[in-house]
Image (cartoon, rainbow, N blue to C red):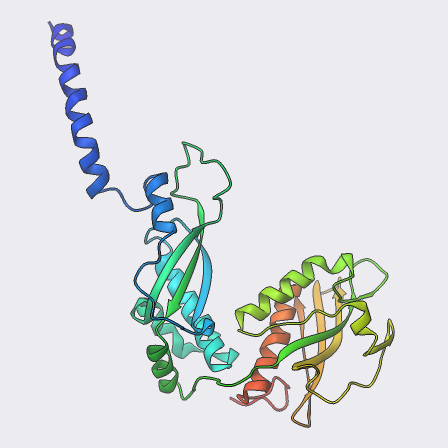
Length: 300
């Protein structure tokens, strides 16, 4: 008897499920719940951005999925980065006054969009799009950001910004030492890290080639006197980046001159990504007039 009932009702149940499935997909499935829906959301900005917003008001983070799991975190991270870019004050990134903004970073967003970081990789059925990495690009409202900076006693850094021209001697774990340049194969990952660090602060970097280095370096361990700044619109930063097995980590020592003032600062016990961020943050602090990275002359 039960077998007969199962045979009788099974086709009816399948029919009901088939009818109900489109309604569920349309109303209840999150944007990243299926591959097609995810790609459509990823290719469209959320909200309409006002035209001609400066790139300083934009930042990105890599997040998981296109739903709300990491979107608030991404908004908070990009907000801090934008505050630094717009003001030229790198200290705002870790300023405790920005902590309360974590829960309301969305209030300052003008628009945002997703880009699938695995778009060229075939989708696995068991994975779906739920755990795929996406580049979340967030554009913030300039008026709201400027007003927020004013509450911190800061203001937008307007006008031309110098780039960074690094002249760095690198002593890595394996000899011989080398100069950071576009021609040095061993510096490939470091070049990429430096460019990435500069972008996070809204500053460009000019990695020199061997010909350009000839203007500043007499030999591998002898730097020539630096020309009067700025050099081709860049702030020249010279120094050494040395691997220390005891720490372990890199030790960086940097020097520059700007507006007839010499500056020296450094960092130790870090990876080279952090070392390059230290250079960029110091340059930004000096050029924007917000302070100095020098240990004995820092302004707060």
